[in-house]
Amino acid sequence: MRILVYGAGVLGCELTHLLLQNRKNVVTLLARGEWKDRIDQKGLTIRHWVQRKTTVDRVQTIDTLVPDDMYDLIFVVMQAGQLSEVLPILKENKSEYFVFVGNEPYAKEVLHTMQRPADKIAFGFQNTAGRRENGQVISVHTGTGMTVGGATAPLSGTFCQRLTAAFEGVKYKLTFYSDMDEWLKCHAALILPVCYVCYACNGDLTRATKTQRKALLDAAWECCEMLKAAGIPVNDAENTDYYREGTKGRKKMEKMLWVMCKTPLGRLCASDHAMHAVSEMQYLDEAFEALRKTTQLSMPAWEQLRSEMPAWRTLLLRTRRK
Image (cartoon, rainbow, N blue to C red):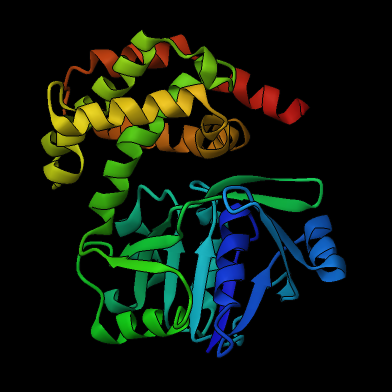
């Protein structure tokens, strides 16, 4: 199977490494600049933090996708907010099957822009975190996989079979979901409050207080209620019930947050990405603020966390200076 991974950030590189484990795949990675040169010269180097091992893969790279390039699958791995720049390029390509991987709050709009049948466009989220440093990727995961599905409907059997074949023989769990627009919005309901706290603590989650951790989960619950008020179908068992005060799910989340804030996992799983992807988080924040205005719902914990972080302009200026 000919596969293109469009985007060579942490997730794109980890995904490329995994797809290469299936010897039936011919994998190409789209990368640019010095990072592409590094991969071409020394291979794709990934330090798997939890597993305490380093892998080096030789992979073919390109820096441009042209309309006549044909692939059996294209995984588009971009930060939220960057897709608008590449959608015209992807739309003109002759390949049929695309999987958009990442925090995309506008799945339905992306599907419309691509002007393809709904059963040819998928959206997914891969449970990998990490960062790039010193010419390698630091990847953090305890078991990789992807939640994937159509924007608002299940994928066709043909698409599911194609995805399954791509990961044949690979330790990678595919979880098929019927409404990824809903799933991604609910996922961001937790991600955004986590980032607000990261920014308030200047990227050091060990400084997060018990009050902030509580407000974080309260804000996620408020956001789920807001989504429902906006007409977004929310799977309460997988979302709201984990944030509502007094539930067993809430107690599990409290323990998870405590571990994140007291160990290096907080940096590797949350704050590193938050501090290096300020524009992406601002994009998500603006998308949710626009949605919230349609409901006029009160969200005091959400507002409190947002008020404690620096202004987006300040955060962006700090990022550019680094």
